[in-house]
Length: 106
Image (cartoon, rainbow, N blue to C red; front, side):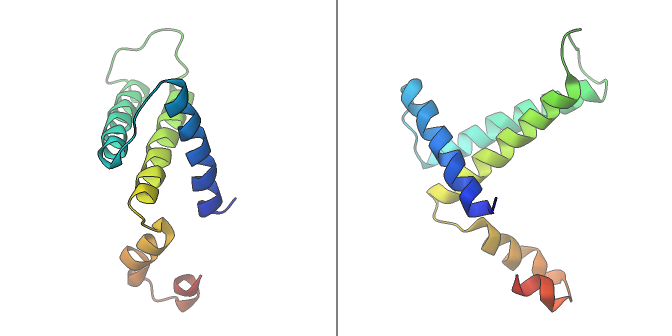
């Protein structure tokens, strides 16, 4: 799945979530959700790296994977709300340091 298709699918999930929980999303809501999810990712990593309390029933690796998914999803949704093409932004910011023109043109 391409990034734009992924973002479109994530948007459908987010729309369902907002409808089911009567959440009014705004540009700052997306940014605040990224911050919330980043906190949860940090907590999951601390547990996985034995630097936080863990209940005996948690699957720490799956929890970390879930939180990475949440941070990535919310970042893509925020970029969509701001009219930013994340692939283009990454090419412009990161790939300019590569000398391989093949990577730059894709």
